[in-house]
Image 1 (cartoon, rainbow, N blue to C red):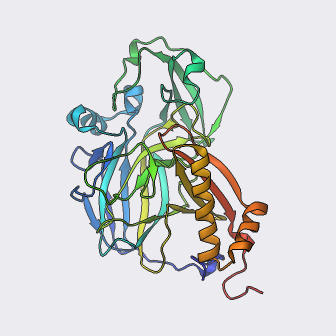
Image 2 (image 1 turned 180 degrees about the vertical axis):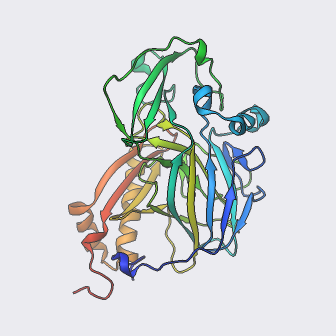
Image 3 (image 1 turned 45 degrees about the vertical axis):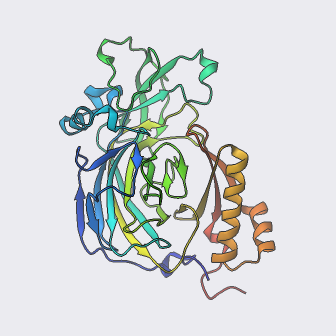
Length: 360
């Protein structure tokens, strides 16, 4: 039986029950980790809408352009000792009423709006080609052209030393600002680099690696209009969002995207009618499965097996037919290579399959 209908008309609509506002404050964010012991920032019911603020941990790369008083409080009031073991500022967690291990939560991302007109990209020491640049780190500040829905480089500067402390505030007003990427325009496609549920482990889990709980997947397709399905591991799911981006290429090769704070509206729906082993993305025309591993071979194998599972278990194809279809119609891509665990995604078009009840 299909996971969801292949035609949009057959998709079940869930009317919103309530709208919750979740601002990012020192009391409603957790910096660098998921933890099943965290107290919820808010509690929602299936179908509720949430309007949440996602704050970039790179706001300090251009504080005069990417910070306001509320963000400044997060950076100054949360001690560095509590920004561990990861780096991302996560808003939440959100308790989903009646969510139990083995359930799924369906998160329909409805809108993602930049909080400011600026974002930052860092060629970081964890970037894929760091040594090729003589171990020099460089920050490029981008400005959004709202009318053209694109961004251009505003200026760039070389960062002295290693950019390691989460929430670093640079002294860019004193830096040597340089021109960069003159005449080049980058499409703006806001999305969340990191979002997910609490894993079923004791203690803190870093936000840096992606995993079955979600986390730092870094797929630019997780934006407005997309739906993510996350497997629930603990009571209440404890869902959080963070690591907002306004643009990124597959691979995220320098170590970062254009990191920029977003205001995000999404609907949370509890699903007890199916299960999937890993974070699953649905777009207007595709399903996208994610695989993770210590290297790309492991990530590729994980993505392949979960796509096989999707086609076999949720589309009703035989394993042999699924394997053939994957080879002739599925597109594999490198999601990212810089987050301690590497990621591969595989896309299959929903239009390949007939509407429910019309397979012959």
